[in-house]
Amino acid sequence: MAAPPSKRQRSSTSGASTSAPPLAATTFIPLIISLPSKTTQIFLLHAALKYPDIANLITSEHTRLTAAKSPKSIDFDHLSKSAWKALNVTYSSMKSSRQFHMAGEASEDVQSCIKTIAKKLLQAR
Image (tube, rainbow, N blue to C red; front, top):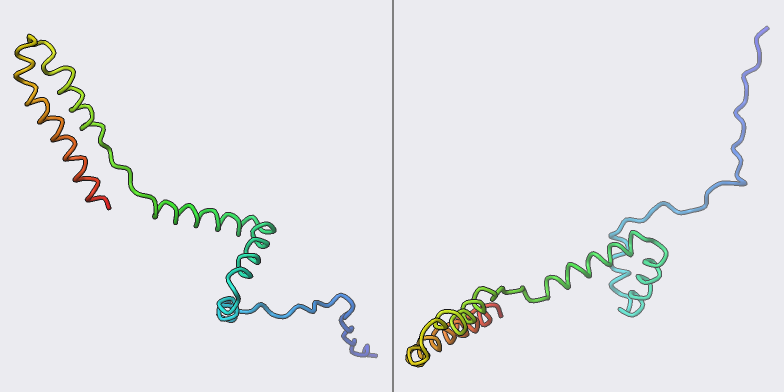
């Protein structure tokens, strides 16, 4: 005698998920753009406080934008040392009368350093 075919049991609906399928990012883009910027900022703040990954994204993007806006550092150390040397070392071993005659040359050296610094600052703008 053959056994009757077994029936499938019904699945339980008591713990069934009621969440909708995930939406594509393209669905949210027009919605987000239509929101006022203050509302978007508040939502972003709440998301950053709740999700560390969002907070890290905000921090890294802020750092990147700040670095892009900040002026690049220009090194004038060699020029300042050159001017200091012209004033304090180059002519210090000479007699005072000779130093007096060389003051024009020292002045030209310092002015040349200042002009070079000014040119580099204008180019950096």
